[in-house]
Amino acid sequence: MSSLNQSKPSNFNIIRHELGKLKEMPPWGRVQGDRWDKLSNFVYRVKTLRGVQRQAQAVARANKLKIQPFENYAVRRWYNHHTHDQVLQMFYAHPDVQPEENRKHRTIDFYLRHIPFDLKISRFPRAYPKDIKYAWQHRHHLALWQYQNQSKQGRYHTGNRLFIVFHHREQPELSWRLRREFETLETLVQEFLDAPILLGLTVTNQRMQDIYQPWSAIIFHIK
Image (cartoon, rainbow, N blue to C red; front, side):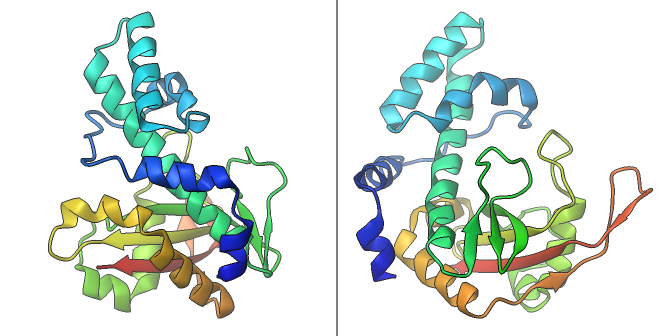
């Protein structure tokens, strides 16, 4: 991955440094929803932890929201977005991956060997009915469960998705920190892209009327 390291913009190192400043992950405090997402969309352009905290406080006051809950929500979105973006750049650096030209496309982040994919990164879901060992051995089952139990807000879709799943064995509540272990993630992404294993799924939509057959894949980062 040396070529990726050489080509990274300097602000990537700044963002990684800022992501490292977060000592504790604040709680969502509420189900993630479209209204608060819209109010906190500044997280996409703000680079520093202190900057996002200040902006969140200002927006909360302007909209007569409780400051601390909204700040927590914004910081969590900020961390999730920028760690996601850092991982996305790892995919872009591989010769078999082409970025989606429309960076605001709702369901496509990149094309892997001409197959479109949305990148989804998250901790091992606590609601999943099996343990991490089962999920590792039965990736098809976990991938299908992820589709069936995804958010019903604006992010819902049944297109192709590539999942990166994080899990801290001894302290699952610290799994969020694995999102910023970028050197390890670069290795895992490179290994997957050099020999990708795709999962063919059969998924029904929210109303159980239509059937979709997306491609999926799972990369685990377990510590």
